Image 1 (cartoon, rainbow, N blue to C red):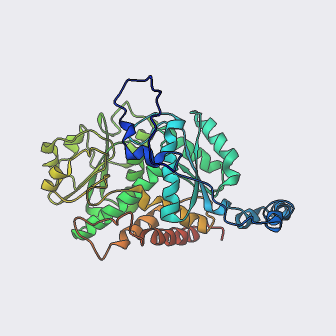
Image 2 (cartoon, helix red, strand yellow):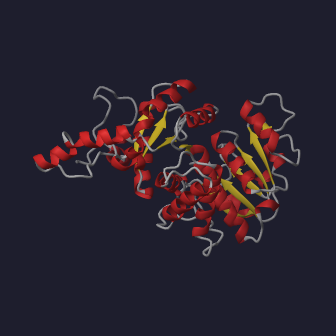
Image 3 (cartoon, rainbow, N blue to C red):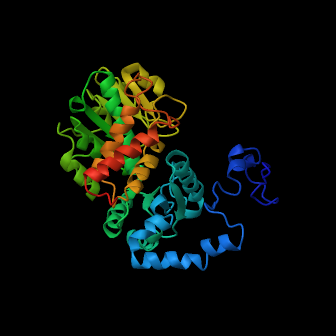
Length: 403
């Protein structure tokens, strides 16, 4: 394939700078990033008669009589549907299903590269919660799991819940739970590095969307001392009358300290800042955090607190960027989580499986801890096997495994 980039606009279109003519990203994406590859040969009529008719009929009949055989004689038990509606893609926002496809393809190749799991990108041209759920339910017989991706909040919460109620395969919204698992792993190691325990920490989370809600829930499940969640209007607290149902639920089990007011005021004396919202936190507010704080400013490409500022006040700094240490990257979690769930044919992914994934991920670098290494690199080959084994074991322990 030629690496030459052909301008996707017409010759008569003189608007813009035609930067894509020279951008290597366009060269890499030309023709897409995926292809279907056969796992069996079809070299002659004998191969053809086994791979297709008449041999395939025997396998179809066997599955019809014993439906569980579908896991043994098709790809179902090792393939995930990567499903989006294009409503919340990266930092681009609502760009629609077709424009989301490069991201979904990218997600699929990460599944394969890091977890050995096949994945198929599916971009849906519908937005209603029930429309999406009904569509995926109809597609589910072809897949061993569903990874929901880049679906805007608060619909993403309801879609995940309703879909999991209707299918007997794992449903996992990575923007929520993948981020939460990696964040917890990094926080565990930051606490260990500095001789503290999770139950001694008070965290402030900036962002009450998909990632913020899931991080809050997993931190509480893991036993953190206290956590206050902030949105654009400040601390999510029961005294506010403008809360959505999701935020009202958050207010009911967070913020033991009874804080109210702005994010900046909540940071006073806080041990942990976790940013999943964008925006900028003033340095003056950062300076009020407790000594030896942890700052995980994960907005990408511009962290809520720039690492140069964060390092002035924090013992451990993490971001969502690959050009700084301690990148909170979902690829550390979702390939191994799905690989473990598929390995034991789990019916769903439980909170216990997510906690096990976080513990396994943290343990990978437990003997190598430093302020610049509280989380492994995405290219650490120990990660996926460790997470896979931990998730499979947790699924068996919790009774959701079927093999």
